[in-house]
Every structure is written in C-alpha cells, then in structure tokens.
Length: 200
Image 1 (cartoon, one colour):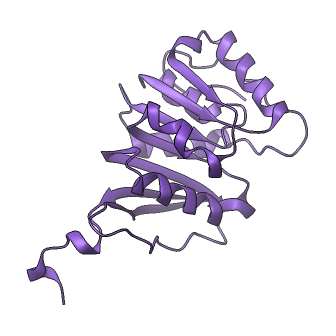
Image 2 (cartoon, rainbow, N blue to C red; image 1 turned 90 degrees about the horizontal axis):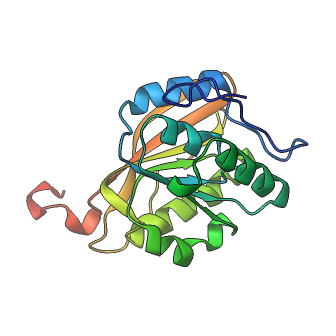
C-alpha cells in the first residue's frame, strides 16, 4: 500500500494486521481523488481511519491538516507509525474514540472542508447517521465535501433527518468501482430554509 500522488507519492504505508481493517484499494483511491480534484489547504476529517491512508493521501496532495478518528488499537499503532514515518505529526491529530461518540472531541477542530469516511461496510448506515449528526452540529464548512465508502450492492439511502433551520447533507454524486461504492455528499439548506415560493 502506497501514497498515490502528491509530495509523498510512492511512499509505503503500513496496514494493520488481520482482516478487521479493509484499506481502500489504490484504483479506488486514485479515482476518488481525481473526482475531488483540488484539496489544497483543506481541513480534513478521516473517520474509521485505519492506517490513515485516505487522510495521508489528502495531506500529500496539499491539505492543511487532518484529524484521524480510530478506536481499534492495532490500527492506531499502525496509524501513528505511518504519520511519524512520513513526517506528518505536526499536520495531524489522532482521536482514539469511536466515531459515534466523537462529536464533542471533534468540535474544537472544526470546521472541516473534506470528510473521508470508510467504515466497515456493515456499519455504513450508522456511519451515515454520525455524519448527519456532525453536519447538524455545525462541524462542517459550508463548502464541505463528504465521502462515504460502502458496498456497491447497498448504497446508503439519502439522508432524511433534519433540524429546522439547519443545513443538511444531500447526495451530490455516486460512483462504483467493482464491489466498492462511494457516495459524495454536499451540505445545503434543510426543508425549513427553502424559500416559500419554491415549496409545493
């Protein structure tokens, strides 16, 4: 596993042992960042970060800072080693906490411009619920791009929950590479923010 592009292109990354963590394949990673295009100066949130491959890819391509959220000890050890080996500790922060309980600890680091979320595929629905909660809490910038990886067979349903007057996530794009599906979300006005003239 290696960094695909940017100033760290070609540098090797360690992966946690076993099959508990499923790293994003090089083909999917390259295609995804091609879609995202410019990530320079972005503040990045890498959820279920595992080895940190996605957040590290963003830093290699010019992102300003990345917060990595991971709870599994083997993955945390690997993540720390990768950041230290690549000289990225000053540009990064690791939060050893479950994604579902990370909101309060993420707040001091917000707002985030790019969110990379690669949960175990069975956990994609709960990951989406966490993303909605973070959006409602104001952790994302107005122009945020949110990436959720999932099984191509079971794409997530569009978010439906919203708080009056709050911006909500909306599906901006969906892609599929083999068994891997990716849904990209943006942030926009909720139902209560839609001008009356545009409402049915």
